[in-house]
Structures are given as C-alpha cells and as structure tokens.
Length: 284
Image 1 (cartoon, one colour):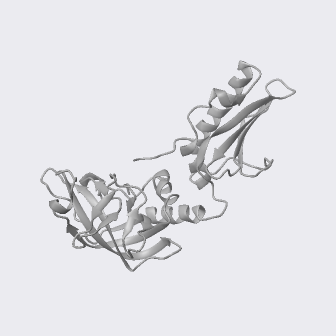
Image 2 (cartoon, rainbow, N blue to C red):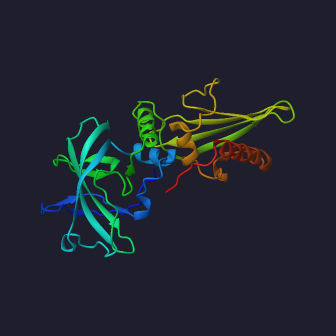
Image 3 (cartoon, one colour):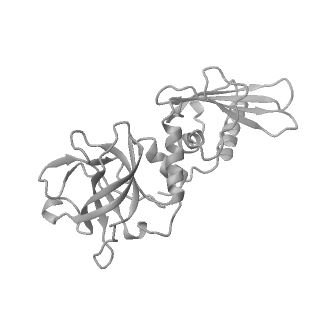
C-alpha cells in the first residue's frame, strides 16, 4: 500500500494537552488513503525502516480534529488530527512501547472539505518514542506511515530483520575511487570501485571482463576483496543500498587512469553495474 505524503511541523500542540511537543506530522491526500493498493515498493519501505528505531503495527482507535486556533500555521486546505491507536505488534524497538500510542496527522481535505475515515484503519508507524512522553510517537519522516496489508507486513518484517543485523549494509555516501586494470589478453580487464559508507563499512564493486564471455560483477563487504563475492540478490538490503544509493555517473575525478581509454572502460563497467541493478523503484 502506498506510503503517505507529508510535511514537517516542528512544534505541534496535542489536542487537550496545551503543551508543545517536538514532532512531525503527515499530510495525507484522500487519494493516497486507498484500500485498493496493497503493495508498497521495497525501496519506500526500506527508506523508513533503516532510519527508524521504533516500528509498530497499529489500529486507529479514534481521531480528533484539532481546532484551527490550536493548529497555528496549518493551511486551510488541511485538517490537523490527533490520532490514537492501539498497538497490534512491536516490530522494532529496544525500549518497547505502550499498548496505545498517539501521533498527529495533517490530512488534506477533498473538494467537499471532507477527509477519509481513519477509525479502525490498520497501519505501520515508523519513528521514535518522544523522550519522557510515553505513548507519543515522533515520525522518522513526515511520510513515515504505511497502510497495513499482508504484502506490506512481510516487507516491513523482512527488511527490519536485515536492518537490525550488526553487519547490515550501510548508507552509501560517495565513491572513494575507482580504477581499471587491463588484462594480458585483448578484451580482458577488471574494474574495481571503492565506496564510502556512513560508518566506513568496506564496500567494493568489481567487474570482470574476459574475451568471449559475459561481464560478471560482484560486491564485497570485506576489508580484503572476497574472490567468492557475487552480485546482490534483488530486493535485499544490499541491493537497495546500491540501487538507491549509487550516483548515476562515475565521477571522473575519482577514476585513477593513465588514459582516457582506460577511464572510459571504468565508466562503461560502472554503467554495466547500474543497468544490472535496475531501477531503485521508489514510488513516492
């Protein structure tokens, strides 16, 4: 099911509390809240899982409209809501969560000034527990919500299982350097591309070319390039990091080459990798 578009609001007032809390609220159009779409993209879910310390499956218990005077700065086309929800399952969260949670949502009105009914809707929340405010959830991003379906449930759980591993693939920050080595035979060669991640986790791409054979590429996550490494399976966290995180072009200033011809081979091999990975698949 589609993820819901959103906007950040730094200071929101919970209805009836009269206290400011640092939070994010989502802007959701009526068209986005469809019970027909049951499959979010892998990348859309992974985007939220990897940045969320708390992931919960909830069912909306009740929704209260926040009055205009308590929703300062909210455009008239939107309705601010206080959503209370019952926790169905804790998917991620070392500190656990309360049986009932609440969060704020700015939902876009339709042409008649109405909003979709949310009561009893089941959804996933991606975020964190607000410090010293049990049950109050701050979303990881303004769009850190996804409606529940069996397909989405499997996606969220599978991605989370990978993401919590100590050696889980990390976010790619840039390409550190690349070079191409020419082999002893015509058409033979190897390109190595070293990536920089946000935790300096080793990540190296290799492309091997041999005369009369198809190119082969692989990704190694070891300090020393693993000769048995292979290309990542599609719809895994490593595939996601590469397909969604690699720049579209190999920066010329990162290629170590003695000639433009050698540099061109490295660039061609990099494009080969991008083509093999395929589209990232974000729908948002």
